[in-house]
Image (cartoon, rainbow, N blue to C red):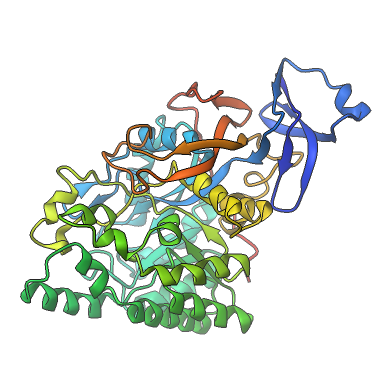
Length: 465
């Protein structure tokens, strides 16, 4: 059984910061010992990694990705192989992707399809949520079987009529089922019926540019849907996780529910923290690069999101990584913004952008690790196996150089997409070395991993009630 010692670094978790050495044995954290102590000095190892001047942090947990996702007649550009390799480059060692139920088909068929896409191809560990596209008596029973197998979260959509949309009755039934089986309902909260009316009206008036994607997906329609989802969950007695929260009024709805003691949780994404409608309005067709749903909001919404993260009104930052190339994919909507595939690349950038938020004073170091590692692991039944550095945890460890400077660019990223949503942004901090279950995947800024190292993760049910 191989033994690795990481020495000289500052170990940062959601709860502690300590100058400690880390002993890894058999792919797990075996022990931590304060630097300079007899315990640390006595460790023997096959490999010693010098982390002097670096943070030693848990591998990131990105609980919202869409590898190879079909959307609008095309597919997300990252495969499980390219997407998980890019995740590793960015210090993320676990993803939870979304398997999709096709209308008229079973949950099992959708899950099996996603297993086939991912099996033997991932550079880091992975799990699956299940998108419920067709809530009926059969799929409700299947939810129980999937929870028992470790697929413990289910996404529903109040948006995209005719594709993923569920009405309030279907949503209530799914929430009631989750209340009984311990699963967690994840909600895309936008009033899709009303949005479709506004899209139709905008196109009829000749408003076809990408910036109108944001115009029609109103803040009020995100807030209204968030409120409605919370009330349905309240009636069902079920916990609720609202994905990709982008607007101040939606944060307020979540905060109010939590103030009442309801088990309501919120996620936001780097694009809402660092980008805005300024990007959607870029001249020509450049704004198409930034079309995602929920949409980018005016910059003044960002402070509510940062405040929500600091105050635990929002618990998780995921990427909603769903990349489409500008050339040949985003361009499908040149004459009609509603045909632009919705999604941004970001799985490689999340940890660095959130460290930049530490540099700028938005977050503490421990809160950085909480929202990027520990909280998503807890929410989705992976903690403490993932999300922390503690005896018994998987040895998913990142050596992070807090002083390194870099410029984010498509020229240097590893995602399989032809642009960067953060092109030219300078950030301080960079991943140096990444271990997944004790095995190097990135070593001193070189990729040494392999497709198939990543294993599938059945997940538990979180203590959310």
